[in-house]
Amino acid sequence: MDRNIMFHKFVAFTAAVHQIANDMTKDARSETITLVQYKILEYIAINQPVTLSEISECMHMSMPNTSRELRKLSDKQLCEKAADTEDRRKQFIRLSEKGEAMMKEAFQSIEARFIKRIETVSDEELNEIEHALDLLHTKIFY
Image (tube, rainbow, N blue to C red; front, side):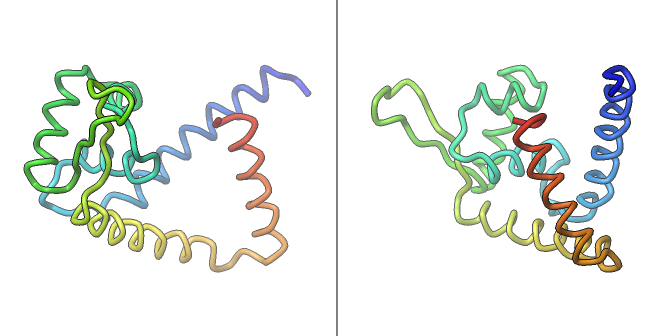
């Protein structure tokens, strides 16, 4: 396999993933939060508990901007901070009950779009897709 060709396929694939993810999530977020705030909540929902620096790195945001957005989310009672039991200076961020409910609703909307997208896919192809996703997750997106 030509690794250069594989790389170009990977670039095209990741661009398509971003576009599809954008299409599937565009109406899923509450109008009470910004797109950046939604992306932060989505990251927290999938990876919680997380630290400020983890969010900052993943979102490609400065620490002060990340902290400001988290404060806004905290003011809206969508996330909460808890001190590390071993190092009180370190804080973990997780969704609050209200944040969990908001993200559950968003994920249900996204899931409905996903189900619609795969409704014509055969069971055999679904198994292949699941295997491909598992393989990508363990070998590329780890």
